[in-house]
Length: 115
Image 1: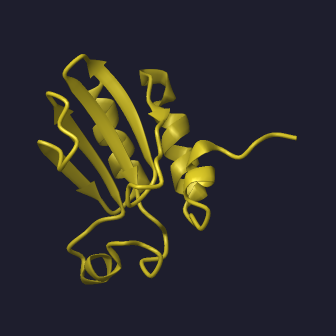
Image 2 (image 1 turned 60 degrees about the vertical axis):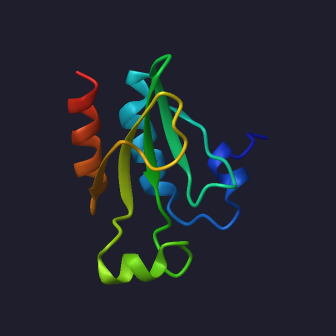
């Protein structure tokens, strides 16, 4: 029997599998891998660009009521898909962040970043 993907093991109530899987498939050619961790607010994919730089894709819950950012999602202050650049081992808010309403918008940005 095939085991659950990491993001499903870390986020047992996660409801955005279709989006996460579509993004993961589209960016795997660049070396992104599922690095989801239950202490984060949502699943993520990471690419270590070099020793000091990491690209992180955040894929929020589909249902804003399940998201830790539910209120901000409902008001439009927080988008469901993000890509961030972290430098110098920063683990807080990314130094550069792009938010998207659509999976395709996020994928296009990641492809542009990985050229």
